[in-house]
Image 1 (cartoon, helix red, strand yellow):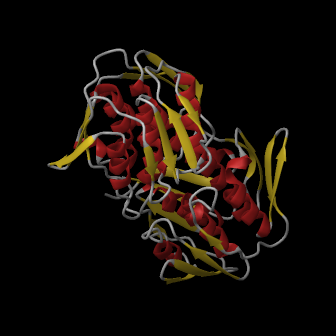
Image 2 (cartoon, helix red, strand yellow; image 1 turned 90 degrees about the vertical axis):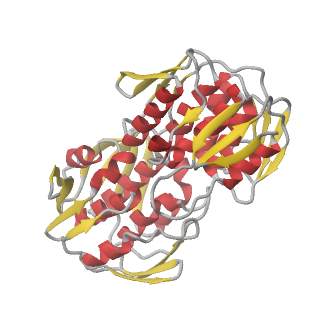
Length: 420
């Protein structure tokens, strides 16, 4: 079992390139099942979740290969078996995204109920109710979702909450449905917009992506696509905080600040200087950091995937801040580990009160999920002494070459074998 070892106190300097967005790549990989032929996906991050999704697509019948660095070819011209087994689906919630495409293309799908990070309940009932509105018959059999429909038909679908994967699954299913589908209270994330762009390039007719009402005019067939994935906004935000928390000065390339508007505003309020220049995004700090309150919310609100990293920054900022988590009920698991390093954090229901301005001390800590892992790396970058982070395999699910990128910026960081 590998660990990450960090000696803190080194200001980050230099240039870093942001990888493609995992949360855009995964649904787009699933969308290739709607077509017959070879799709080329570029700027795909080489991550554990991407490899898991590739394995799942191959079991279904696609041929998936990295034909160049960060360039994925998905060939769906062979027979497609509409079955997604438990042993792969349990590893990653995004596996549920094959449900809509398989049902739309084959008229039947048998997909295991999903797994993923243990950060709270994320039921798939909204996906299933939406597919039923399109005419599917749904049953649960021995831990599997079984969906059948001779032909999906467009309809109005009103989502209880703006679920990202639910919106994506229903968009993909509706892309081959007969007639018009209107998705009300749709998720508005940039990754949803990106999937709509790709589906439209395949021949779909989707409008309204990025708003809370998405309209899908069903097509008779879709064709393969050649597409370059948008940059990862959460990786961008993580590196902005890495620079600020170390009093560094870095340039971030291949990033899109407009996808992080609320995060950027909160960081600027706390004293982080973020400049969008021709040569990239320049990040520096202007004096001491100030405490700022945040509340997570669906896009365009403050993303839950940046909550742990921002909380770590607030451990350094002067004053008291309140971090409120409204999206997932169990996303404060990093708090106990930050407290082991000397952080002053008190949990009160769905809020964490952070009293900053204290220097953290290096310690041995345990990562519990993907973003918690990133927050502990950030803590280690500015803590005094040595920090050892265990269970770092979580990082490999969502950050491409994270340690190597930090090392290129001057961080004293390494991965090494740890105790079993």
